[in-house]
Length: 422
Image 1 (cartoon, one colour):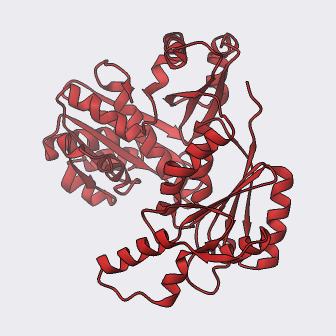
Image 2 (image 1 turned 180 degrees about the vertical axis):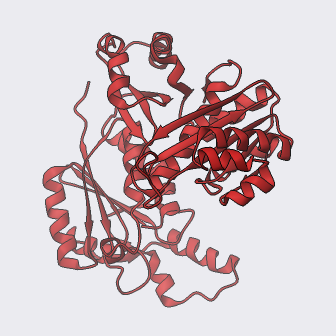
């Protein structure tokens, strides 16, 4: 296995330091670099000051052989990146005619006047390799200096993503002769990282030397990512896939998908395969469960609707919950969510319904029902199943956890079927 270069990501812009813009670029770059086997050693954010950018460049070249820079390539006076890079690499800015023609074409297409500042987008350091930006006006710039590669890209996320996918990643693979690498992802839900690791310890120990396992926890579940490095033998991915049956034998009840599939996307094929429609009755989740379900393209084929019964009066009037049930057990109870789910099936005319009720916080808890108490129910034509959980990580996470557990309750109680694969 060849020695691969460390990568440093540098984001430039005061708006990042002030928290006015959230840095999503670094997360995307880190994920994409990992797919080809390159490791990000450090991520840093730098202000719009020339001296601080230069200092950051000097420090970065001491730590990494690849420095990926985003931001500061716009047409305004605070966009200093390419001016700083020109001085840093002892060059001057020159007009890049293909970029100028591209920028002129954009303004002509939208019938807008082109100002001199827009023309300056086509200025680049003379000693850089220009990376054509088909989706914006600022080109990327590639410098190979004393064994270290510096790449400057726009901070606009869709422009950065285009350049990364179309130009930067392929060039890095060629420049550093990155060996073939494969990733196989298995999605699990309902079991914590430590318990999961204990259940698959023997399987993990027996993995081939060129296959590594990473645990990537998220709220309510864990992504298991197998990374396989080339060992000179053919069919690496197929050999990695052949490791999965034993994993399913150990933790199959917690696996909901293979590949980069979210839980809300995995339930659609399960419902469609069984020709079932779904509806929701929501209290503490306030419609978030329905939102998650309908965020999936094609969900209209199986999702009919939702009743957000936040107040007890709505639970009674719209879902048919018995007032005596509420009086005896309270809104946050398995008895109530069972009646909510059954009422949603009737009112929405669906085959399957989910119901949620809970104390999201920060107030509303009692000694017997503290903040984070969650009650869920699943109902179909043959059964109604309810569960109670206790999870308190603050209001927003409590609600998000409730949604995850509700979707998992649906998955667990549908008739048996195959795991979703992508």
